[in-house]
Image 1 (cartoon, rainbow, N blue to C red):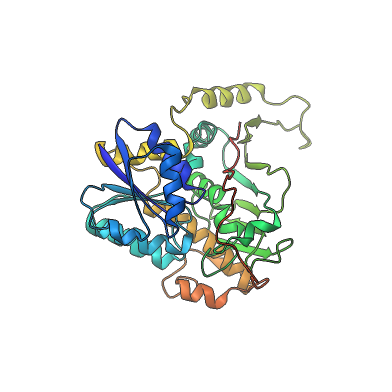
Image 2: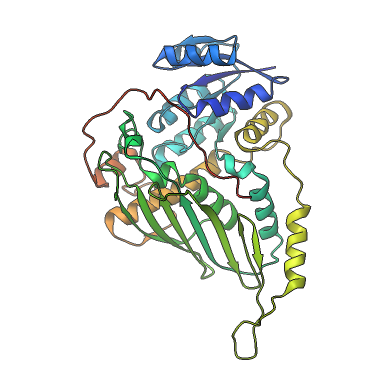
Length: 386
């Protein structure tokens, strides 16, 4: 039995708690930490947990009964909390974004290697059947060279969203929609296509004047083979349509799922009838990938627990989490300095450290006031891509 501690009991923690409870035969939640202990106590009552509650996570570091922790606290706390628990001999599953800077990512990875404890970064959308199937089709190279990828990370958040005390600030949230919403889609893009060679981006705050950070960004990514990708990150899009589209040499595929394979006439214009044989072959490969038994956070928690107990490979480890943050950091560097950014970002780059990032980003607005907690803490975590 793997004993789990939950660090931070805000809205996202319920996804972790419910995932662990679904794995009750192999794990047990034994502790919760939150700077607002009453929040944690309400979680204990809600889920009927047999767990101790502490206000300071450091009280749990030397608890030998705890095997692993889920870190669900605000982004600026991820690195120090993760490193403390890893050095204390605990496995760590940390919510997105992995950290506030690439330097912090490297420190987390170093601690994991030295202590031989697992570090996994939440990217729950990888654990969705349509996403796994899309990746499977891409890996078979049935669509040929990918010429263009379109990533629409469209979310909508009301003006009051940024009233929460830590949101909307560079210091505590670490960024806006690019870091904290599009991280899901940027992670999937880099998982499927790898890292680009350079990035050019623009950001703005169009509708949330109670936040320092962006609520909309557009980035163009260029790859070594000449391909391009465009990534739109937003919390101003009503309807929250989210999609990834890959335009290949032979066909187009996407989630939500759609396949199309056009055929050229002699003059280069498309024939009226598509390449149905290829479309059917792609559809067959897509359908052949089995339905996942556990999806979303439950799928990732299952992978985390199996890695701890059975040696199963982590799908998203610290290195994978760092790749996603590197892309996001490059987007911020490009948008704030107005330059084309080459990858990889080196350790002497001003955006490598949290201090360097804070010194170089622009504040669209200054946060004037804040609240400690919302009475309604229900959240949405994106579409199912079917």
